[in-house]
Image (cartoon, rainbow, N blue to C red; front, side, top):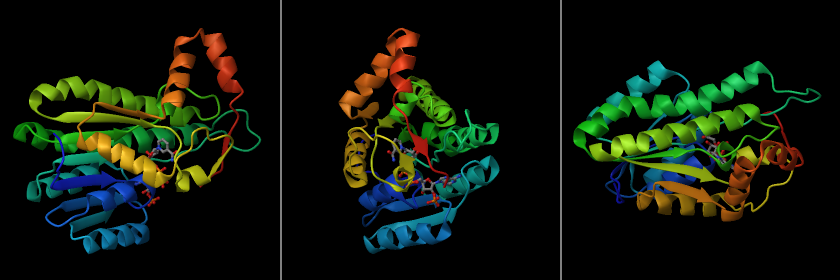
Amino acid sequence: MRAPFRVVVITGASSGLGASLASAYAAPQVVLGLIGRSRERLEAVAAACTGRGAQVYSEAIDVADATVMAEWLTDFDRNNPVELLVANAGISAGIEDGAGYESPETTTRQIEVNLLGSVNTVAPLLPGLCARRRGQIALIASVAGLRGLPYSPGYCASKAGVRAYGEALRPLLEPQGVGVSVVCPGFFTSRMTDRWEGPTPFLVSGERAARRIKRGIDQARRRIAFPFPLVVGMRFCDLAPAALGDEILRRFRFRIRSA
Ligand SMILES: NC(=O)c1ccc[n+]([C@@H]2O[C@H](COP(=O)([O-])OP(=O)(O)OC[C@H]3O[C@@H](n4cnc5c(N)ncnc54)[C@H](OP(=O)(O)O)[C@@H]3O)[C@@H](O)[C@H]2O)c1
């Protein structure tokens, strides 16, 4: 389904990309359902969207909580049939200071929030979307989902999972009238990127990334991946002999400070 969208749900709407998309979709006659963790930040975004004329329902929910997500989303969808769903909430982490590997808790939490959180966002709305035979789902993965990076195994695993989930849903749902956009952005400025210590090739502003992603979603593009050189680089490392890909990516050293 292409824009305009009259009912939009966005997770991770309390900051960064999610907040920018919420503000961009906010307009008179638009209903927004916004989910995040920090109630304070979420209320500030909701107030800004209300100021732009949208009707806003916001709720502080952990996307990893499947039961609460399903309850809130099905209730919202019953009253406001969803047209666009953006599964954007995400966290990042990596190798802890002084450790040679990521702790199991860190890996697991990223998979719970990023991957299972996306499933918890999409799955409860599928019956309604498919029954109505209209709507668009956007899943925010990452270029880190194109090939594993040695210093953030859990993040890469979670984003590869989001990408594969979206790519599987896309041909499955299309004949049922529901479109899927799989989004693989490179670096953009945000609170998440503020904790990144290391090179950030082709970094763009959060606003610019949000504009590009919104344009792709509005056109119902199946894949939104940028910047081109980073996408090609990651694809090359994936297709190259494993030893060569490993050697190149091992040189791309970075550290993600804890939140
Ligand atoms: N920044 C980049 O360079 C980059 C590149 C590629 C992909 N991405 C992806 O883009 C998405 C947005 O990231 P961002 O850069 O805009 O970071 P951000 O500013 O940190 O925003 C992350 C959002 O997700 C929410 N969130 C985190 N854990 C949650 C949970 N358990 N339940 C509900 N909401 C939760 C946060 O809520 P609170 O504000 O309340 O904590 C926040 O609204 C993420 O999926 C990220 O992986 C980012």
